[in-house]
Image 1: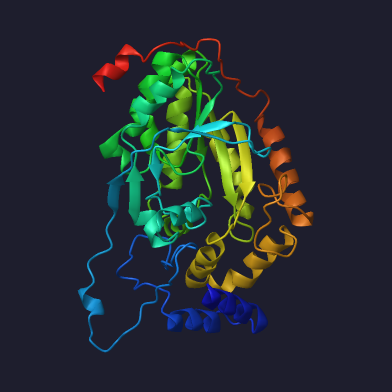
Image 2 (image 1 turned 180 degrees about the vertical axis):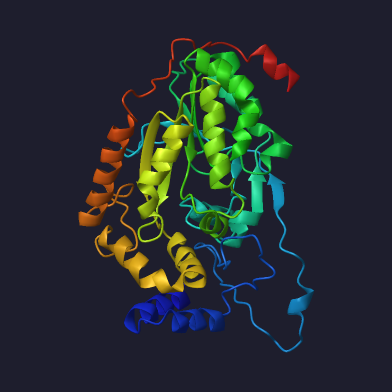
Length: 383
């Protein structure tokens, strides 16, 4: 998106975020604020595989007022398989499940936004509002677990888009998946920003008692106002801490992910987040530094200019100091934590605080020896 690039140059070259904002406004990239109320992204650029780009402009017919409200739409997706495999050395799991494509939480920094390009949709507003649900997920999962030679290892859920995003209340796909995993005796690790995970405490507590489940809550900031603009439809920071407490008291191994850490915006909260999560019952913790791959960078820059223009130069300078002068570095071993003095400082602060609080003294290892192989489980006949 050339207009965002030019605005970025202007913000750094002149030191005036006002000029950068004006350039984006004049480009026609930004949607009307009243049309996208409650959304994080302010732009809806075409996906990188599309041959055309979209710009909003007034053609003199005064028809912009006739635009319908920007509402969430859900389509059903029918994949052939549901378990996704990976060989990344940066993460601890080799398989995952994504019950949904796109995420209504709308976190402006979400690294999964570019995946909407594969559907011919925008990584901007489309990612937050044009969602895909996979109602056959539980049936497909049971089928894949039934295959001869399947070797059980922890399945990670919530690593791409949140399995407990608002539409889960209606579709209940995640709960059906957990029912299959419980019946099969298969381990699962969940990452979420939603308090809705507490709905499934009954299943998760039974699985945890057998050493089959653990849950991580992602807490980016404790500042309610910042959270509202940055991740508008996710649970409030207070609700996430309350959920950690509920899960922990139910005997479910619970951890906190300080992710992502946004340098110059949320990094000063690192110790306070860990303190609060530990008090709520978390026993493990981790962190990830902000990642801005592909289309995520211009979407984040536009958001930063709209909401925190006075911090733009500082935030982007710190990000680039950890990414070898670039917005993002995808090199293995660097993309999750960054590199350089500032990244080193964040790492040491995390380690010192975690040690002081007694976090990560013992990592929860889930069991695989309880796995029940064989034909489709009888429980699936009821779904």
